Image (cartoon, rainbow, N blue to C red; front, top):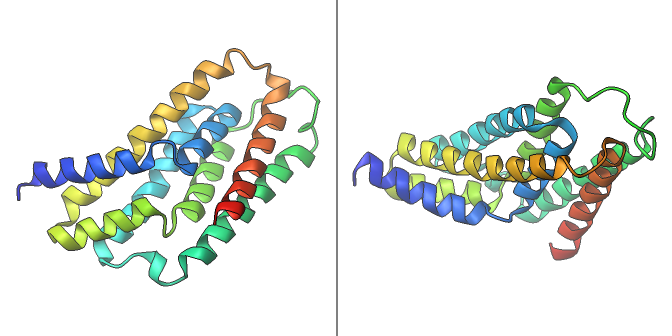
Length: 189
């Protein structure tokens, strides 16, 4: 098969799997808090790390830990991050005096996505596509572009909503969304 065919198959499969996924919801929430650019950059770094490792190694990080354990760890990370957002000074009810830094957004996006995507269906799909086609670059690029594009769509939606949500409510809303996302992940696991 040609490079472009493998790329398009990888892109189509991964993009479809990612739409409406917990990661896209997390990116949406992070973008409300930190803005789109740092969140997209952090997400792309995490996706590159995880997709790259799955495509290169041919066996995913999900084999090192059980998928159930990874799911539970990521759920608790969401809950703890949400609680942090609600309980930190200036988080609940007070207007934000200073916009959070781009660096904080990049780090939050990278770390949360790296934990939550480890062993996720898209990483496993990338691994399987790499094994099936025995081709690193088109599988990796197809996966990375698909995950980045799905993230970009979530950021666009957050950017539109950001215009209608007062700044003082963004941190509490984000905190609650992270807690709900984590609790939902535990319940559905």
